[in-house]
Every structure is written in structure tokens, then in C-alpha cells.
Length: 358
Image (cartoon, rainbow, N blue to C red; front, side, top):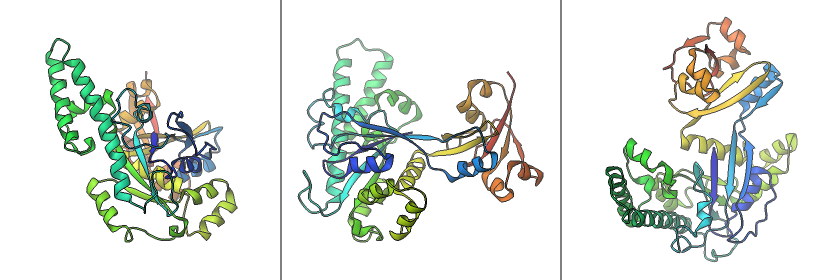
């Protein structure tokens, strides 16, 4: 899973990136700076518990990659689609994490009072304009070539997207057929990606739910169908430098149940429709990421194509049953073991051993 971090200059994007990944990237990177990239493991107490029981030679967590680009300058996307490398850096990501300033300290381009709605619109306009420039460029090139049934169908679809963008509507609000989705996969349109808004709050709000204070902004996000999370990058930076009991004590003192990193990753999983299943044994305990409603046959393919091709049955124990009985073996003895066919829909937390023959 890849998460792209964007926002206006000075909103605390790179501070958040450093806190999330325990990195030390410069917070003063220029517009032409290369993106900051770091990969961390997905926190999951379930795999920790499985490892405690199995004591495997290796424990493999799911990973998430964060990509932090330089601050977006309003008007930049309108210059040229090809030249706008800043936004191109996040085209490969799965979900966009849009950092918004909700602190009083003034910063570059943000000298006025906190304006959540205005700042969201500025960034979304850049994503929209970047996609529009890409579509116009593609249509112009297609008009120079001989038409085919496939190209005519593609151009008709692009014209549909163009009209939607010209109406100042993000592409993620446009209903598309499965065939249209397939046609557009290679474009990686920015305004079509799922978004999460991170409200980078002032430290004084750390123990406060700011929804009522910024009710208009919350209503706007609801209208956009965009989930949000409030995090103080400054506080998270302090948390990132602590471990064990020191981290636990700091969290308790600030009224936090867990680091913001955990909450953000969990929200990204939810937004993308991701879940985890586990394989467990003495050699390795491993978390695997799949989509909600994926079946056992598809889950087997995540591990290896041979397992998918030779699939026989899936031996399944739910994590809840594992936790209740203390081990997979004891859960089996209690009758909580199941043999499932290919079409079984995998549940989040399932512990699976695949029977196969090739």
C-alpha cells in the first residue's frame, strides 16, 4: 500500500512524514526537491500475538510506503501536465493523504486564519487541473491519429471525464462502469484517487474533538465523502522518539490511546477496502493484505500462483477463536476449525493454511 502526502507549503507535511516513518527529512525542501519516501511495517497486535505463540524464525508484517512531496503552490498544475513533476510523483500511490493546517502559527502562503475548506479546495483544484491538462493532451494526440473503434471509445470516455472536470467536480465523484474503470487504469488520475484529510491540529486541541469548532468544514468533508483524522504532527514527532513504557506514559499523559500513525494506517486500510489474513507456523508468521470480499482462491494467489493453481481447500481459524483458545491447535480441538472451498469469502484476521497440489 502506498500513501501520498500532499498539502500547501508550511502545513506540516514533512513533519508528519518524519513522525510517521521516524525519518529525518528536511522540512525546507524546495519545489523541485525529490519526494521523501519511506516504508514502515503496518502495526498489528494480532501478528504480534501470533508470533508470541508460534515463536517463528521470521515474522513478516504488511508494509506501507509513504511518499511526501514538496508543498503544492496554487496555479502550478495549470502550467503543463508534463512539466508538473511535483504531482506526478504521487500518481502511483493508492490513497492521497491531504494535510491541512489547523494551528495558529502563520506559515508560507498561509498567513491568514485557519481555513480548512479553502485549503482543501486549493489542493483539489490542483489535482483537478493536472488531470484536465493530461486529458486535453491525450485527446489532442488522438485527433492526429487514424481513428479505430477502440480509440473512439476511449476518446468518448475522456470527453466525459473532461466535462466532469470542467464542471469543477473531482473524478472520484463520477460513476463509471467496470469497463470504463479498466480503460482508465493506466492514466492514474489524481482526482480519481481516494483521499484522507489529516487535520494537523494545534497541540492545545490534542484532547479536544474539533468537529464542533469547525462544523462547516466537517459538513463540507461529509459532502465530499472524504474521511478525516485529527493529528498533531508536533506531538507525533515526540511520540516517534519514544519506545516502550516511555511511549505508553506519554500517550496516557496526552489522552491518546495510540500513536496517530496507527490510526492513519487503519483508516487508509478502511478507505481502500483492505483487510489482512495470516499464515502461521514455526518458520514464519506473516500478514497478507487483500481486498474485502476476496475469496480463498484469490487469497491463495497472493502467496503464490502455484498455490492458487493447485488450490484444494483452505484450513481456516478465525483470529477471535485463536485468541479465545490460545492457539490454532486448541481452537481446532474446540471445533472452531473449518475447511473452506475456493469461493469462501476471507474475513479480516483469518488464519489460513492452504491445501494445494501441483
